[in-house]
Image 1 (cartoon, each protein chain N blue to C red):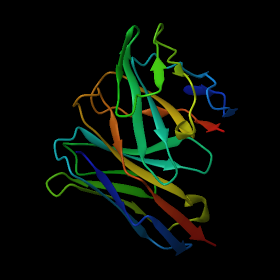
Image 2 (spheres, chains in turn purple, red):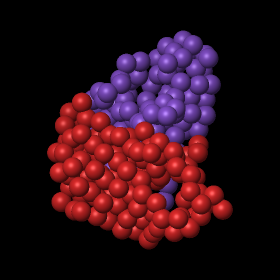
Image 3 (cartoon, rainbow over the protein chains, first blue to last red):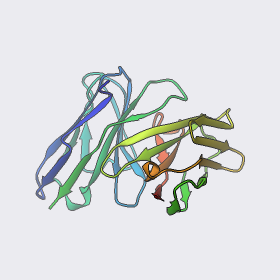
Length: 113
Length: 114
């Protein structure tokens, strides 16, 4: 089972560049999330989606955008990359029922220089 | 603001010891609490999920408990092994502004010495 797949695994960006972090899941989960994890810190929610065509901001959305055109895919777009966006990014998904586990991808380690 | 605190931040034990990792949270109106394991450079692997109506869950050598009234959860690892070395994260789920979002602690980094 593939589960939640993130690409790329690593990326170095220059300040001001843009990129899209890809996330796809094959479990037919309606709920998907993007988190960032800074060193020594807990994960913080960037954006989430409760289904295709529906997205909303989380705790730290500034500098990011998302789209959800299909159930499977939930890409995260970074526009005008800044050093503060250096982090590890995790995508997660779960079914839209209470008390169900969240499944996480392997993460994308992004460095902005 | 909802917060999750994990104590200790780091723990080093000899192989074979039983150990307890602690997690406290400020919001007692939770739906569930989930314990994760994170290996260096890897994603999060779900270990146990405790629903708000439950007191504990067990999986192999792992046992997680939940006390909503005191805002505490513990993860008990029996007979620790070097392969248990990882960072352990707890997170609780609420249905506030962000549907099914998980509020994470900073983790406890466990090292089990052979």
